Length: 350
Ligand SMILES: [Cu+2]
Image 1 (spheres, protein in one colour):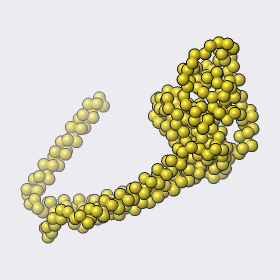
Image 2 (spheres, protein in one colour; image 1 turned 180 degrees about the horizontal axis):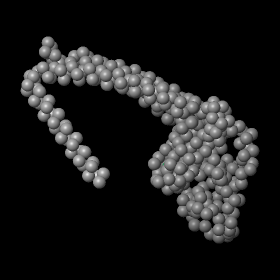
Image 3 (tube, rainbow, N blue to C red; image 1 turned 90 degrees about the vertical axis):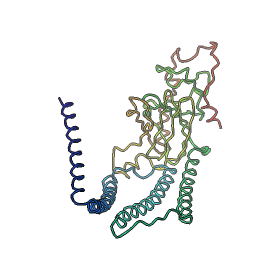
Image 4 (cartoon, rainbow, N blue to C red; image 1 turned 135 degrees about the horizontal axis):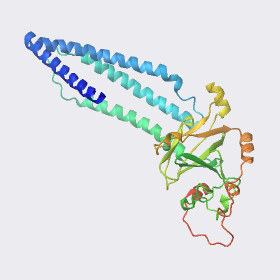
């Protein structure tokens, strides 16, 4: 029934549009085409100016009503640079937008077609072409240069004192691995992945794996003012490690190791005070649509002092110890197939 009503409604709208068109055609004939065109021109010119003013009001309204939903101050060193880049881009493009749109709508009004004026044919001006090509090109090149500098900052090799943490996405949560006391992540191989007792496919022939820790609750613990290098991977499809509070993000691609590093500068406790939200948590979001459970890929980041981190770490057991069932560990003397592992170790050994 509702389908039939919709069809009737659409039909009626077409009839009304047709009738309006017919009526305006008749009125044009009756009153003279030029007179009607002049009136339409005037009306359109005024409507364009109103449209522009309403648009500006809309921008202001969005800005004021959504300001309190923006992210709090950046919680990483790189993030501060990123915010400054964003602001620079916004100011430069904002000024250009305001000037060009004001001229566009104002000219549409001021130079509307009237009987008193004929159009002036002005097809080309090399000097003007040069100016409006060169200035935007220089401005865009400068903005891109700032972006490239920031990009290489976060993707360059991390400082020597950086802690290493592996973040692996899977449908639909994050697996966080810490290298343990040796500071080295052991080899892993996707063929050894087993949801029961080896979620990352750690190679138990590699001694570096023995002390590796996989956080049981999937929390990413970081030390304030200490750089962290994230070794990022995926178990299945493309995910993306999104750390909006730190202004960082990086794709997690199956078969490829990606990295990024940053230095968190505000602890979770300090951020609770800054935001006035006692329940505040830093989060890892998945920034790449990865399947039906994508929305639920929310991890937690805890930024704490070195002492708090050490206390938490002291309570953690290695993944090997937690899963050291006979099935997980190879019996002594048993030959293990030679497998090619990914480049996790190569990266962390640098
Ligand atoms: Cu996702």
